[in-house]
Length: 142
Image (cartoon, rainbow, N blue to C red; front, top):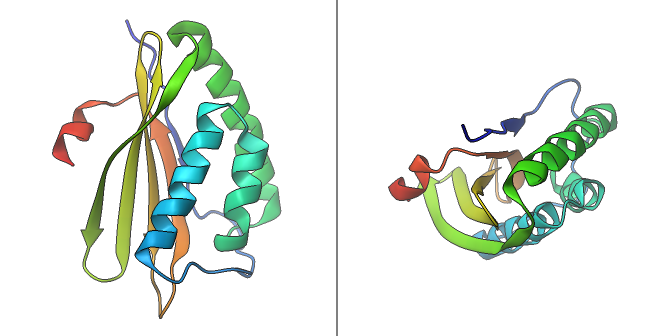
């Protein structure tokens, strides 16, 4: 049975002020791509550092998620082999306030789905949710 790894990084706890928003859709895709490449390399701390300026979440929650992400990533790579690359799958919009970019993180024996969801409360985009899992069926709905 293939191990499924589920991590959803959600807005939990007391949010902190966003110090840098993303001005346009192109910027959201670039930020997601950068974080997916860091994920592929297992660099969870660098991934968090890349997203935090654009993400209203407190540092304590980020620290917990980094630690959990490292553990889960190590277990996944133990069973799925080395990372082989990142493949862009698609972008989906929901109204004018939400956009999701999806990537596949490819390993020797399996792949993971990696999503970045951005929210536009006013004029600029902020990170709302980052998640990854072993569910590949949703990749066909992009």
